[in-house]
Amino acid sequence: MSLKRFSSKIEIGCDEAGRGSLSGPVVASAVILPKNFKNSDLDDSKKLSLKKREELSKIILENAISCEIGIVDEKKIDEINILNASILAMHKALKKTQNTFEVILVDGPHFKSYKNHSHNCIIRGDSKYLAIAAASIIAKTYRDKFMRKIHDEFPNYKWFKNKGYPTKEHRLAIKSFGVSKYHRKSFKLIDNQTSLMI
Image (cartoon, rainbow, N blue to C red):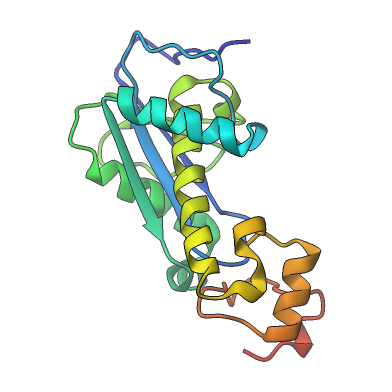
């Protein structure tokens, strides 16, 4: 089933990537698509293959009226918690947006009002509405690229493969090699937290 627009207003979709990761930043995107934009392949980024996400990312970047990124690093995540950091990343992306928009569409149940704009929080919005799906794809492709880049700095954690998420291999690497500067110290990094020196 093809995704649709939420309303006839100028809408900007927001979504984040990396919320459940043990390392690296949380990255959000805010995307305004043309009113006549259609693409039957657009969907929640987690449902798409790497190849398909990258193909769609190019299409979105070529066609979007506006496409901005907001980043909150692991230190700030530890300071304000991941939920607040996710919302802050969305606000950062919105702040960069130069184009006019009338309504903010947010994936998931949580958001804090941005200036005087109305917003709608939509559960599984990235599998329902075009603008949120586009933001989901842009945020994930940007963050995955960043995690592949920092993998070269700390190859023991295999971030090129797990993107910082809590796979068994990643947790074992943390247990063996300790934490890096990119790990979120406020997260439960290994199953037995007491044996981890921070």
